[in-house]
Length: 269
Image 1 (cartoon, rainbow, N blue to C red):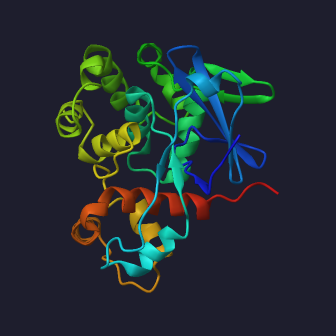
Image 2 (image 1 turned 180 degrees about the vertical axis):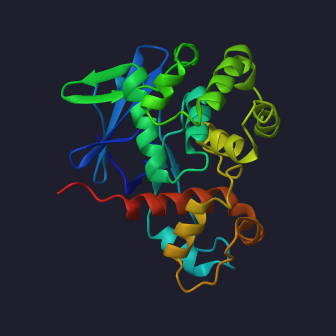
């Protein structure tokens, strides 16, 4: 068991389990690992997962960061150390970003989890159950009705195109630097800069490439720093954010999303 100030559970693969959340991770050595976070504690549901499971990365922000955004920085510093698991699967990260297109976070969560529960591999550790994201091969076997059954009729073309491209290019994509990878992902039909940036950030934990004009960043920045006047539209906010973040763009973006996750999550009573 490890104690942390905040475990960032922004990815929809984190599913509620009473007052806790659990997530299954694909691991090459033993197939899978399941992490459980409750309060300030992180545990592995399977003993062997401590050796094979992905290691979370820790993010902090100095009080002196981004002097143009003092109220925001003060709020984010109050989080203390924040840990986030890098998504070990670029395919999962790309599929997740596609599911997140256009819709609100709550709807994307429902669609992602329903898709995994219907067509992904189940992972059980004791009474805990989670699911892995369906493989590219599994996605390509699904009929239109099966996408419709889980509310993803609109996303079926994008998911199929991404699955086909990943089977051909996935191993090469995983070796590319972020800028080159973003350009390659944008060659996939229905994958644009927002989707590519969100996928790469999830997979790499480098949130300097995250689409920082995203509604989630705008919403939680305003929540964390309510006295500030924030630009209302996406492009103006993105420029404002990048100019004032300086060398801390990645940390400010990630920690603002962590602030949102912490304040949006209310454990069941």
